[in-house]
Image (tube, rainbow, N blue to C red; front, side, top):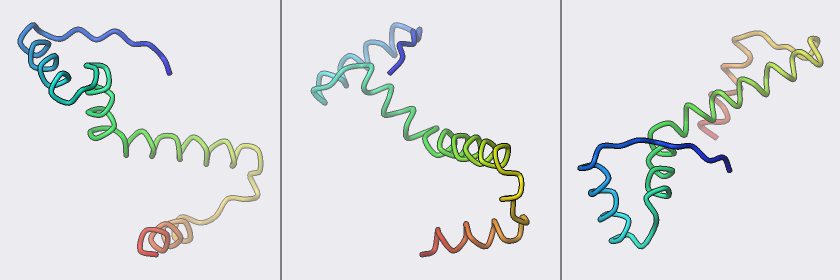
Length: 79
């Protein structure tokens, strides 16, 4: 885990502090959860793209046509 500093206004901080107390957690955990909810899928997509690019760069012959890729992705989502 990496440390990142985030500035929020006083009203937001008070609200987060109360919510963290009510949920028996930390403000940092609330922020991590919110990021996961809002950006989690996008972050996963970026990681998948980076993995695919690395795989292609190491083995260019393993590339498939776009239609094949989309077909596989559709099958994995519906299956």
